[in-house]
Length: 201
Image (cartoon, rainbow, N blue to C red; front, side, top):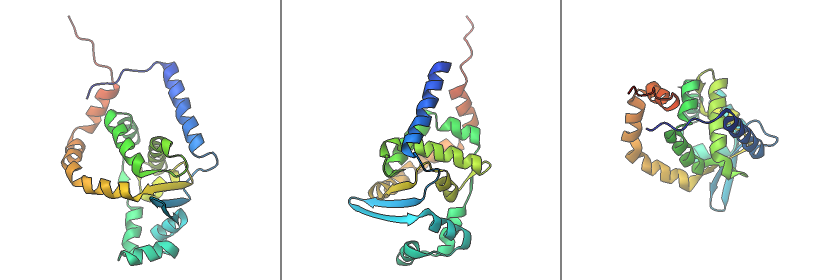
């Protein structure tokens, strides 16, 4: 992977200001997700994040969430465990990864599936923000509930057709992701962010 050109301090400051502005536009009054909205064409169905948190905390599902799990034949306790499952992610390395071409590619693909309901164009910004803030709040770990608590918009849309299409394509991506994760991630990221030493004549 070829290193990206370094930015001047003023350019970095402008980029940071733009990032903050986009997050503010995406969520002028919200600091965490309140609803997960499943979208398929004109169909929309919302589940309160509070219900997901209750499921994660107690293993018991209420309201529409309970109905959906019953119809899908899912054990609420097992789903609760999944919501609580924490993945260890080093904050600095993850932040750097999300700034690489690979990371931005992944964010762009994910932002088609998961995005602020009323501001889909800032989906990448919201994903990056929720991931970094979620890891920071989770002391180097990230769970589904932690991600939602850190998501900078009150309504998180999940595009069901896009999600289904992505899941169908996961088998073809498996080997690529496996090879990437098994590589020396730290060294790869250092090479991206550290300028190459000058070549001696």
